[in-house]
Image (cartoon, rainbow, N blue to C red):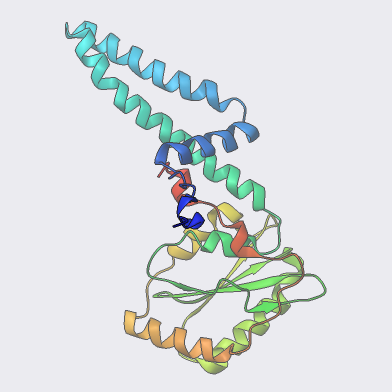
Length: 237
C-alpha cells in the first residue's frame, strides 16, 4: 500500500525568540542611532568592576567584591540601554501623525485609551486623542500650538455637553511653547490628580464610546498602532 505522501512532509519548526534575541535587537536599534552606546556600555561594566576591585582592595577582599560588583554594573548598563532605546523609539516616530497614540499606548493600567483619534482636521491632519482615567477625561492635541485651540476646544465642548460634571484636562503635544514633548506625554497624563472612582471611570468610558459610535476616518498613511514603541523590548524581555 502506498504511503500517504503528506505524512512525509514535516512542518518547519518556528524558532522561539528568547529574551536575549530581543535585547540584541534593541541594542542594534540604539547603536544605529547612537554609535557611542557600545563604548558607554563597556565603560559602565568595566568601570563598575574596577570600582568593586578598588573597594575590595581596601577591605582586603578584592576578587570577592569585584565579582559582586559585576552584576550591578551589568544592571546599570541595561538601565542605560533601556533609556537610550526609549529615546530612540520616540525619536523615530516624533512628528509622525498618530505619534501621541503610540505614547499613550505605553500606559499600562488604570486608563481607557482610544487608539484612534477622536477628532481630526482632515486638511492639516491635526488630531485630538482621548484617555479616560480617575483624573477624568484627558484630551491631548497633536499638532502645532497655533492651531490647537479650535480643534481641542470643539472636542472639549462635545464632551462637556455629554458629561457636564466630569473633569476635562486639556494637553498639547509638540515642540512649541507650552506643549509637552512626545516622550513626556504618558507621564503628563498619569500625573494628573485623581477625581473619579473606578466605577465612575467605567461609566464615563461607556458613555463616551456611545458618543463616537462611528469611527472617524483615519487620514491616508496614518496608523498610530504601528508606531508604538516596544516597551518589553526596551527592557530586554
